[in-house]
Picture (tube, rainbow, N blue to C red):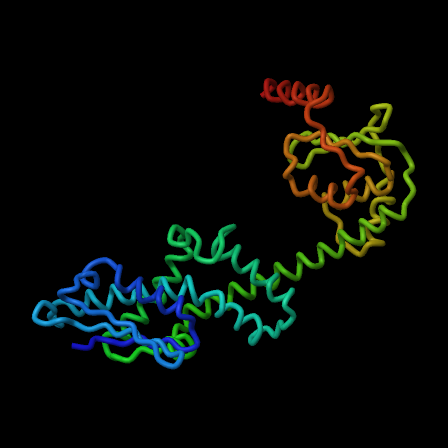
Length: 309
């Protein structure tokens, strides 16, 4: 008794084999050979996976629901792990008209971060809430379709159905594009600052940038005296570079204004974004301190403040 046939066009043998194995190894009734028979047929680049009930062990009224639910679950995993990347590419290129490979890959990278964190496509995906939410949207449509129809064309289904799922992917792409554009502008800004630093002559030998924690910094000169750059100088520098003023800008602008040959950064948080930005702009002029007398005094000062409380 034929239950349904999944047709895969323009897919590799590896993709068809994977779906075939997923259906074979799925839990419950699909795994029982006395109830279910699954066959893969390859002809002229076309892959057809036929799922049939084996009488008398298989009974449609009692077993059909379990078969369709198990198949829908497997098909949803297959779409998320094998097809999702291509669906995102299509949205990026067709809906948002990005064509250049570097731009497309950049946007796709931000999509991956949103959908999978730092993992690769499908890697550890079943553990995430976002993955399960998307999977459930796909399962419900697959199940409703399999209950009614016996011929299932994957290409057609991806193209004309799964609207809620594809709407979510479109939202992800839109967010990723915003992030990509901002990141590109940030990198252009950093490059401009790097050039600005490069053409400037050093005005003083070195400075100590002491990170007290959070957004609290102290800048000392070679005589260990606090340095205060006139606010107007800092503002003019930032405005020249056409960037809105924020806390990080003021620190960086001050460093550009005093133009040290070397910057010693004393911090317990080297991964803080402002620290990474300073390192990126000033490059080999920056040295991170491991643990010196200044750091020791800084820790003592922090302990004293804590004990006051």
